[in-house]
Amino acid sequence: MRKKKPLYLRIIMGVILMVALIFFLFPVMWMFLTSFKTQDQIFSTPPILIPPAEQWNLDNYVAVMRDNKGLQGVRDTTIVAFSTALISVSIGALAAYSLARFRFGGDEFSFWIISTRMFPPVASAIPLFLIFRQLEILDTHWVLIIANSVFNVPFAVWLLKGFIEDLPVELEEAALIEGASIFGAFWRITLPLITPGLVTAFLFTFVFTWNEFMFALLMTRRAVRPMTVVISSLAGGHTILWAQIAAAGVITIIPGVLVVIFLQRYIVRGLTMGALKN
Image: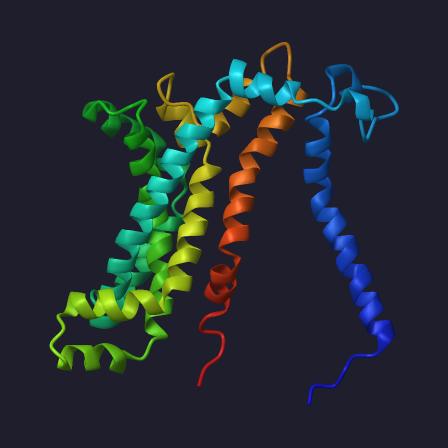
């Protein structure tokens, strides 16, 4: 039976965790409160932490969504992030299965795949820009989906390869003996068992793409404007709309929070899968 910790240790740990929680959540709370302030309140001395209750309104949110193309930003970012995550996980699962089960290319090839993730995206920005210009797909959703997939697929492969290697190969061999094809064993046996890993890979690639800024700024103009570009446009040469930037920031983090809330059960299983060995 696990020995219960003394009361004073539990109190100390609780206080430490509470302080850490406040420290990490304070910037988010400050951004949320700032989104309801006026420009004068933001620069007031002493600083106003919480604006007066009668002044709480959605003017900054309306201004971002209606006047500064925030609605288009949310739409475009959702399309790009969801499509990139879906493509990355689909390709990553197939590649990870071949690497884990057929030892294709050996460990050196596996390391080469994940090493491309270490490659700085800024170093490939100009070559990719020239390629996409020749293909005439600049300022489209596809240009961002392809560019982000290039860097997210290796991460998905690396993550899912570990999940597949933790599964007993005997399960797939039994399906093959029963007459299933290799792809059939992969589809009916492997994929359902690594669902937590698929969800975890999908979430990470979704968040990576949702927060991506460099490709979005370089390869889009007017037809496509992701939310990161919309936020940067609120900082002009003479005026910085801090309240609207805070409102856009709150809007930007909501999808990621909702995804984590709804997929929390799979995420916890995915991050801890393989920690215990028989």
